[in-house]
Image (cartoon, rainbow, N blue to C red; front, side, top):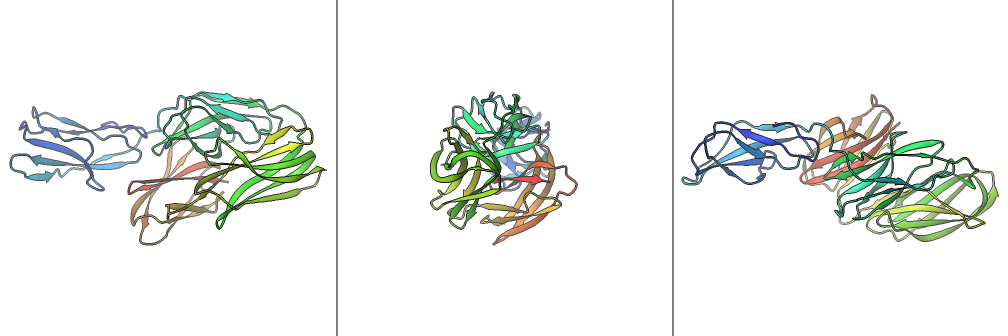
Length: 365
């Protein structure tokens, strides 16, 4: 049938079928011979359409023919290869921008009508700079409020809804223009990194005006944050200052962090969100170095079952850019991917196979 978009289904057409009702046709995944859907009986001797179900990657199918009376089984010699064409249909979530920030600061965007399926994630995309903001956040069944990056003049945003490994951009897009006013604190960087079993949260300021203190806030769902640490600010200081805080009790899974900067008058500014994955029980792990990347990067896959996996690189619009096979044996596997010819921006790396789907963001300088 027609090549489906990511997450959609198509049909496999079998011609010249038997008109013997005891003959059945079963569509199977050629990689593992698992049945796809229910078997169909030959009825009129005409063609039969078999549904592939939802597809997120290119797939190959075979058909098993069974005679219910004799018990004889045979596999049709022809295989059917199905490619994925295009991206998933646009997401219909509404987007509402928060209060216009001062230039150089961030604000928030409210994503409406989110699914109550926790496997579905949402993430902001700055369409002006073509960069993802923060990390994917699981759906809640209600609205999600996600922080933008720093806005220097104006920026447009969409949300990326990912379901079953298929990313889809929202049709809705918001334009945010910042307001010119002096920032009490100029934040140069804010990041979180795993240090053994602890998380180091660090940030750097270029200048501070009437800065009272910083609060380090933490969340396990990317939405509800609570303070876990407080660091005194420098008051008024036009020099460069570095700060850090250690979370010595991170939870298994994804830990989200943000910074609340509080002025002497009680006004505050929130930073963007940084996230750290703490693996437990030998969870499948994919690391990429270097990231951001200029010419090529090395991928390391650990704790995967042995086998062949699909390694695919997509741009932010869901277009497949690179596709190759990753072979994993009994230990960690490494592979090198060249990206020197790609334009700068954000990309999505997907490792799939053996019922696993791992997604990693890549930044190309």
